[in-house]
Image (tube, rainbow, N blue to C red; front, side, top):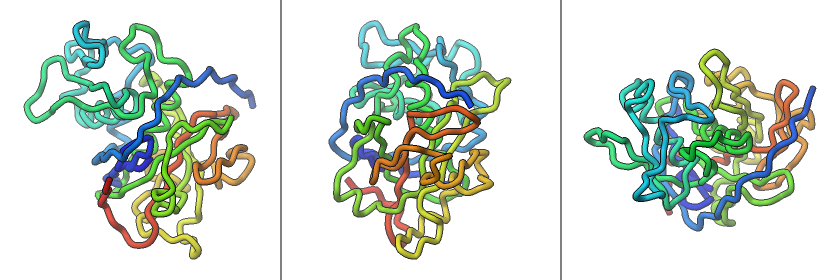
Length: 283
């Protein structure tokens, strides 16, 4: 997926700003997207940390007249539509949690803010009245953590993933794999936590930043797999280290990654464009 995302190839445009093992629940069925999609991502750590979403957040509900429209109720609790960085969280949440046929709509719309389109469909329980499953939480979290930025620089990234059984979660095509061959790393964790708890933000590093055999100028603008990370992401070392991840899915990165004694089977890997920096994300 390239973020520019158009498919389950999502290329996201990123404004680079800047033990016990859990038994995982069954992953919700996610449809394969067949083209690229573009996003201008400028999600910062403060945006994510200060605008929390809960696993049973009652600010979201389905439009009774149109079930493909998710409504965000601005009258309940903190209004993310006007909170600093809240709009960016809503945009990313929509793209990660909702499907391509769905949109997130503000209950009382603000000028200049159209509906936020869905893309990956990782959280079908959102707005249903039921709490998100652990699988849904971790898929959406990995998707959003992968988009965190630490610098004022647009970067086009390719998102892709397979689960522990080798099933495709976020797909890509051979042309994208050729163009975006620099494996930045794999992201995982959980952002659906109360404000009293620290966000679970984790990553592991793919290619070395200055890998002479596989160079990407964009790597210097992406710091989420650097240790220490300017994005408050806890880097677990190299993804190829069995202490970090124990399942290598080739051009889809790693899964079954561990942090603080917990196993995360839901991960998203990021690949960068080869060679010189180019922020364009063409379909």
